[in-house]
Length: 127
Image: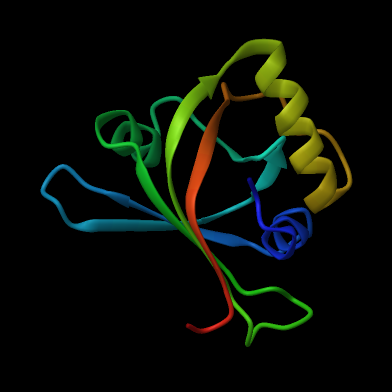
């Protein structure tokens, strides 16, 4: 279950930083748009992106967000990707996330999928 304070930040427009594990074991981080889907965290990506390839091999993730309204109370989430969505189910989520961040649906010029993260540890603030 998502902590209500974590959900509030995820449902806002703060950028998240996603950490995954490269094949050699070193970290890989990228900023991205995020949202919620039930009690899961979702983000969009290309099916052949570095993060998608990393997560298919090792589904563990860490996310960090610095809320715009209080960047000194960061949100940290660790979890794992438990599902990949494609097609209409993915585009419904992608358009919701895109509209939240930029006010319009995501362009259909490139193939996109959605990663569904099950949070395992959630922290609000420095701790």
